[in-house]
Length: 151
Image (tube, rainbow, N blue to C red; front, side, top):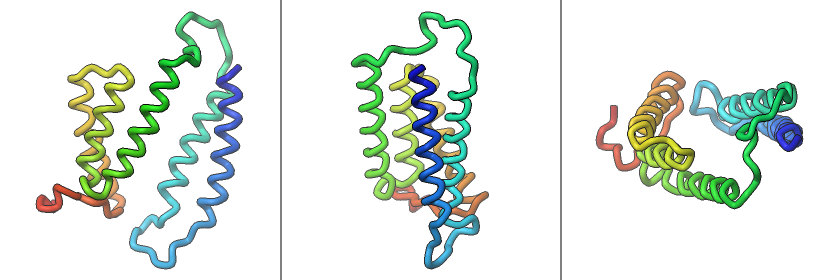
């Protein structure tokens, strides 16, 4: 039941934020896709996830189907919010790639990823996303400490 309540709240938040993002127009455009494409894409994906939470059948419950909201879960949520704030603070000085590598590794470890998987997936995701946004979508991202390695 709590998943369905969360789904409704998330869907309403996404719809509200989509109306705000849809009206955003930058005074100048330096990106071919425009400034609202990225937030709209994320909000659409989040809304689809919320719809999935609302429409999925409840089925039979097992012991591990839904974690109880205890100190461990709240601790992970608090740590996750702290990591997002740290990521935002290090985005410009360290650059996209380094801050994303650190963020990816710590998030993977936070959610029980092994050291090997965490140390491989963090850099692969960071470099892959950098290539996607900077080269394919032509969205400039800061290189920070790696600016001397301009590709």
